[in-house]
Image (cartoon, rainbow, N blue to C red):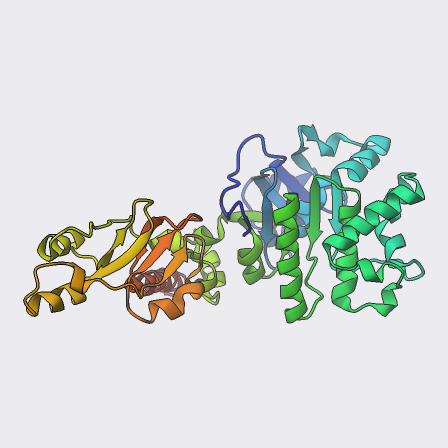
Length: 415
């Protein structure tokens, strides 16, 4: 997603948000027998059966880098929302540390905790939680009002936030006059108005219709490209997670199952549980050209046809590049052999210019039409320079490899 690209925000030990060995047990004696049973390796159901307590988080560890959009995904009861709520201490951890910008949030109380929530985080909920009797601009500026910011200053900040979500003309409207998608934009603007470094988004788009939901995802990614906030985003929808996340954390029964880039989650599922999730995902929306392209193997226009074909080797073709490294012509093996059979020894008559280009971060879906022509695709950087060759056969081979991997996991589970 965005200019930085997915996977660029690799986790490190000094990330802006860091959970270390975090447990959360729900019940009257969370630090008693239930905690010991959980640490001993019993399942969530076993702990409930033997202690009457519910395991919310089980030794959860992950790091969110500054400026990263980190998605935690899982089904109901997986612990995803519980993990988020330890970051601003809406939930108190049973055990472990939750570090935010070098501070263990779980040690904060009273005024210090309130100040942390106001200054460090903005939260967007699944349900819009707007005040029906306040206008849009009053709703967006409400958090600043609590902080005793002057009306002029908070209105200016609210209008700036509304401009980011495209709702400036509705500043004087009331929530009842807006659609569901527009109300959710107001909720996002409210979180942005105080300009916090961290956004906590708990199933923020789950209540929206599919089309509006996709539009909100697009708008959020555009805002993220501009603001580079650190975002912890919770969802139960794997398609949403893979579409927007720099990295994705999949949880089950309170524990982390796998953390990786969308491409890693899709192409290298760590367990059968993850494989079950990804089997219904449109792989073409996730896998990027960079994942399967070959390194460039350019040929010189002055080469003889025989030398050019030898240089291509077992590839379907290769590109001629200019002095700046930009592709200008394509020689396919088929065209070269055809020209050779007609008696030519020069490469020129076999060259073609009707080839397609793609960017490294283009997804398979972006190049399907071009791949359908059966010709190698030139993968180029922002300056148009050749950085790779994409053989259409590689696309199908990669799709088939992922499908076989998923099938193998299913056989392990059900046989």
